[in-house]
Length: 86
Image 1 (spheres, rainbow, N blue to C red):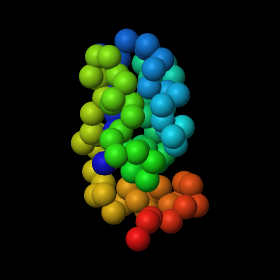
Image 2: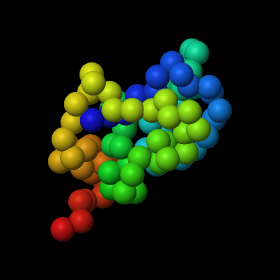
Image 3: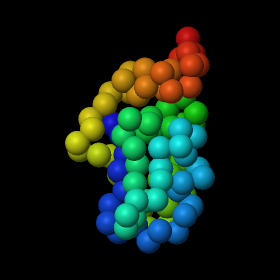
Image 4: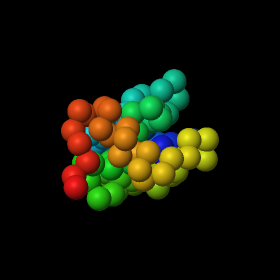
């Protein structure tokens, strides 16, 4: 499932540089996560780094973009060209 940022975002800028897929960018009012690039850090880290650094806990799973762990791995492989470890 891709992540999303709620309107509780304070635009602190800490999440954007943490995203290994460059899925986070400044939107019109708050930061936004591009669901086609978000893998919840699967393939890079054990936990979503944006959620780890967010000081107001405004990042959660997007109900509009449900994805299984296997689907996130496929997205990771497509985005990076790397294969899932055996």
